[in-house]
Length: 373
Image: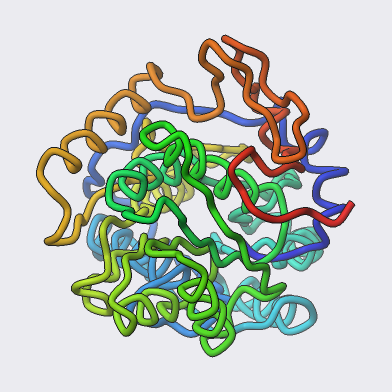
């Protein structure tokens, strides 16, 4: 999720990531690990505090899932609210130096510090979550968040009365653009005239700024809102204003019991458990995973009480179709898909391949706003 300059990421992510991406079968329910020589020490570094919902909460839920699955065969440690850069390197290095055999670093800005520490600790395994550079002892993993965004767009399109949605976004990196575009395509699949207004924050976690952006969008005919930021502030704003919102990262019905229509949640427990188990069994290898609905890493559900059963069934059927490979968010139908400047970006009847999705640098037709070139 977390940041680097958008232009730098677009320039390198395809060559570094595409071709190494694996798409395994769905993760099974974790089971107890076979007895080993002692518990595996697993460390986790978090970029923000652990809140009741959000990016960091989902990764800490993954850590807890490892503990629940492996019991006495694992001992976990976490450090929260670690800034990217020098602080991250210090914390990661400390974990490596204190006997942790595997260290998870779930923030894009942790990638370079992780690689730097990994060079000095070749016997420690590192998992750079949302990173794209691997090494013999550094694996990477990310999720196809855009699949969940498309499904949420279907729900938003069915529920919106104005046909105008809002989107509070952090940085214009490909991952965020994928989400905005997939959400818009999902919304327009059920309401072809729907539009999505975007506000860029240039920050991931700033609750007051997130709230202000949401409030500004609600003043522009927006009655349903999505976001790619790290707190529950947008959901809280929707609850306050009597609007609707799509939760991201976590189920946020505690924050927006009336506002939430659906949640796009990220499920890391299966992946984290398998990787820790591989360390214990001596089978860990560097890899690069980009998993989604099929792998159980992205899930849409947790519908709000106001969402009709027919809409819920429609979204869940589409989720099943994505998992089966029968529905692709970035596949054009009989008509080509165009960006919001009129250029054809997906030819009629064609689908984007991973390399094209990973270097996405356009906004689809229906999105109000422009990207800095």
